[in-house]
Length: 379
Image (cartoon, rainbow, N blue to C red; front, side, top):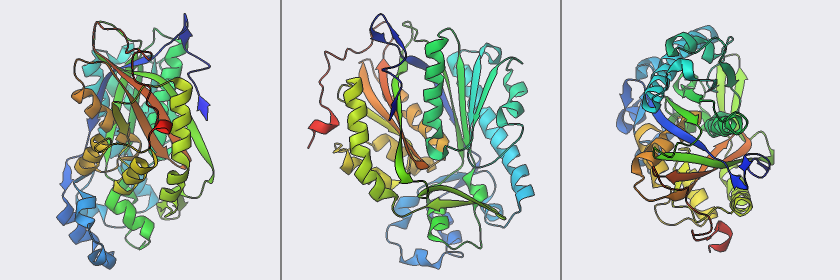
């Protein structure tokens, strides 16, 4: 595990956090409910007739193109053109709303981090967004393309690390995914079927800066990343002549069930994180939710925020953490509280965040005054 907190970001003995000034999300206009999706998918996957509870697991999805267009074959050249058009539009929408919510102009951004794994562009996505967002020519640009579903949480961690060294800067993080473009009609694998049931298109963005005591905020206090050894082939994309094919090995739940508890326990213990009042997990899907709830001995409803996001928009991959954070911020009240952010991605990788909700004009929630009921102490 790489734990950033103990190495960086202490001033006067106090761990410094980065404040999330705003979070915004965006979905495309083509809404598909469970019944429509399953009716169309059964043409390619007759086994759906035998899957119990498929409707409940699917929920609502938003697609960048009409369903009949998504389900047709397309080559790499068309895939690239479609990805550029749709990803740029979704990312721009989320980013502009995040900037507006933060009260920050595009030319006040010092670092922009763009995240996407469902398409490949050179020059990178940030170049295509720069003019529309009003970014300065000297803005620092960091594109992240290979971290999959954990990329959003990793980008937030990178933004925090930057702000530790440059506390007066403002950072824009944008994640956008259009996994619907990676549907392959001729691929009848379980991986392709699972991806069709789980993923949806969407984008998320956040503006981060130093904490301002005059405004309520969600602070990223500490972050960590853990790569589980020997799991490179379990989760990711396989690039073939026809495009990206999803890899979703059925061993993933077992790997998480075995490894997630000691990783999270160490993160909580090393950072002396008080008992979490909330969890913001990227919306991986019902089976992964159940595995994490069991492995971490979480109480009833602990992952309701992420379950709700999944039902409304599905797993939007790297953008999914922003949908969860948006819900967390909307649900916080006047009381200070601590929480945990979790991203799961290829590697298999766990991205962890210690989050703190701090109402305006109040001190950061005290670690010493909060109960220290760690995951390792729960049965």
